[in-house]
Length: 146
Image (cartoon, rainbow, N blue to C red):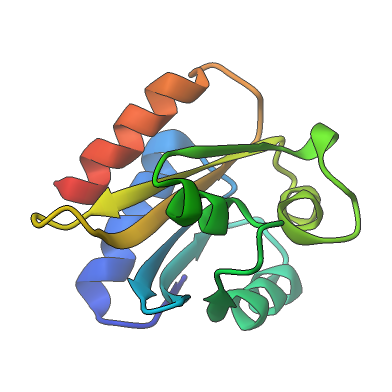
């Protein structure tokens, strides 16, 4: 597991990955016009090369990267569901979901008390369900504010 901003954050993201049995989970802080990777937790059997390439690619993400679910979650101010089979193979969430061995990802904006977006918490899941998308959104939202 990689951690960018302290042990507690990385532990929190890994706990969510385990709870959802996700292929990967990640937390990005929203700062200005960018998302900055705070923590990433890959599944134990994910090749190190895949995890490292993802972390390098996702370390800092511009909000013009609309091919990524984490960006859509910020831009739309709502949960974003990405399904590998509906996305291009060569770029964005479609590429990374396939590299992770995941069928879908669920990215959820985490709101600060004043109402602005503070972060995005995302999970790449191995199947299309169960749990269904709405359940995953609620689990992530609860985990992100807990």
